[in-house]
Length: 112
Image (cartoon, rainbow, N blue to C red):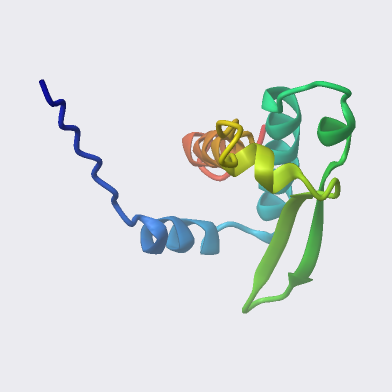
C-alpha cells in the first residue's frame, strides 16, 4: 500500500512585504520585539542558551527602507530551526514571525 501526500506552497511574500512596508518605524520595531518575545517563549530549551541568545537589531530605518533582524547568536540556532539529518526541525523563529505579524495586522498596525 502506498500513501501519497501533496504539499502546496504559496508565495505570499509580495503581499506580506507590502503590508510590512505600510508599517511605521515604531511598528516595525514593535514587530521585532514581539517576534523576539514569541521566539523565546516557543524556543526549545535544554540549557536555555539558545533562548537567551535570541535578540533583534534595527539595521536601517529611513523613509525608503526599514530593516530589522531577529537572530540567535549561538551558532546552532539554524540547526534547531531547520533540523539536520539526525534531528527533526523544531521551528521557533518562523512561527514567531507569523504570530507576531498576525498580531500587528489584527491590531491595525498597533502593538497595544
